[in-house]
Amino acid sequence: MKSKSLPIVVIAYNRPRSLLRLLDSLSKAYYPNSKVPLIISIDHSDTNQDVLKIANEFDWQFGTKTVVYSEVNLGLRQHVLQCGNYAIKYGNVILLEDDLYVSPCFYEYTLQALEFSEEKSYIGGISLYNHQFNVHKVVPFTAIEDGFDNWYFQFASSWGQAWSRTHWEDFYNWYKNKDVLTANTETPNNVTAWSEKSWLKYYIVYLIEKNKFFLYPKVSLSTNFSDQGTHAVQDSNTYQVPLLQHASRRFNFSELEESYSTYDAFFENLKLHKFLEINKHQLCVDLNGYRTEFNKRYILTSQILNYEVIRTYGKSLKPIEANIISNIPGKEIFLYDSSKVMTNNRSLDKTQDIFYNIKYLSYRDAFYLFVSMTKKKLFNAINRK
Image 1 (spheres, rainbow, N blue to C red):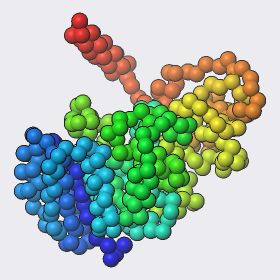
Image 2: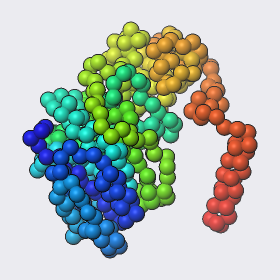
Image 3: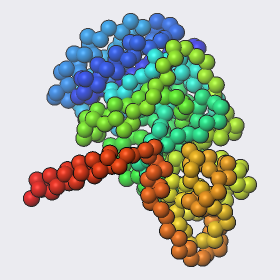
């Protein structure tokens, strides 16, 4: 790793305010040397003059700066794939879309994470971003704390990511022989349904098929403003996460086998079989209740299914799998034996589920929210007439 260069590639398109903000955060970060290549790659648009001006005028004091402007519109998928190929040229690459913002120590983290990932075939890429939101269920998410600075996720990162040449070439060789993706039980429906403009869904399916993981940080090194643009109707703070502000540190990464913070593409913990004393190949975990198909004998889920219930658990501790690890009593989570069919006439308490995911909501705030949403619905209904 020390002999390789690690360029930063910024992907920009039609968002001058976003690009300026990201470049400002890059200029405030710490770099161990003054030879960091910065490549600003701009997709073609008739309204990109301000973006080009910002890129050309930006003063990069930590190495060479190159501005690349596409003569034709590539679209996000092709643009990212093109930029990913810088990993082949340089040996490694960091990719940042223009609506991101980075931590002062994002570069140090990436250097260490890439070095750690060398010759580990189970790692398919490095994330700078730390998910705190389950995009399938639209609820908060937290990776369980196991004492390390990282966790593993069978879900590629698009909000700050890095690849070695090996990471990228392995994926790209697989991708070149892939047609349109079809639904299957191992890929979340939400992912399969994404637009064909998405490169990310291909990378996620690649990770699933090859049983690889992205290495994620416990504390984020990038955050996402989700500024209005091609793929966002309006600005949003939904995906904002706290950034690591420490100027310099040594990260303590776990091997996959020793990590208890390992998740599949459904945001489900893959190490719970150890606490249930069930063979991992016979267990399907669905604590978030998002799966629609089950292909294992034992099913751990928050859904009501018509199989024999072996054990039940409460839903109080956070993250949700902590209730299984600590064997919390209750009747919100069920372990089923799918080989034994029977009718279960239970019903779930939706109110309890809502309050599990919300820290606190006062009656006044709840009433205001209800009135505000009702007004908005009425306004939209009137305007559609």
